[in-house]
Image (cartoon, rainbow, N blue to C red; front, side, top):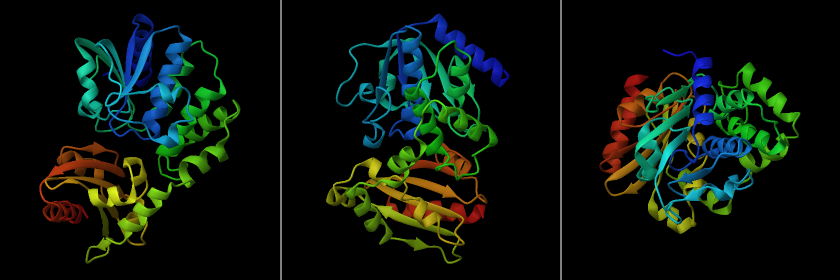
Length: 325
């Protein structure tokens, strides 16, 4: 079992020894995934390495200000023309989370796996996994510090963004003294913290506001008032002109009700599949719960995809949450 410092050194050696990388994050990337992708890209560019950044789908528009974010290829629109031998996976809790980008991994590809999810299954040749890190961006801060590269405001903004989003604006329990120390250092490089908070945490699109209004109309609570959930359907998405990123933050509303221990967003994919996003106040380990359904995540924020009818899935998931409580 390697120490964290040893794993960082192995990652550094992996990056220095190879070239022509494919950088991927998880499907439906969030702020930490996008910022981690471009942070690795920035590092490789400083080292004179070749690289391609790829995701299964589009990145959220609210992240398009990040360094070279427009260069992250959406394989559904612009697939690579070949396979890659050297892969760097960031913020992917398990191998399945790379999604369809896997088809661009060479059969004998070597993988560097950098992640902070406790459910990570160490699928890389080199694994840098730190479950107590607030974000993958925190791990990348430590990795960049080991290289002889000079920080600039663009990469500092990327790392700050990953920390900002995965700590909920530095409000969640993962906001450690180390996180605040890193943030303090990043601000000295010229990061505009207030502007980033406004853009990423406060600003909403009109479709997002309509989706929130629609979702809250379905708000339901368990008899004991400890579980609350909302539902979003494909018709809701179409009628509101919404995309996946417009669902960001909706799950927090049922969770924020006084007395509620677990809030859930049930997103209907089709008649036989539903995605459940869960947020916990702390009494329930939703990562373990999601993992039991084939998903994963963090103790207080996790998700999974389930097959079956919506009504049956709600009954099953809410029932399991009640049992945990």
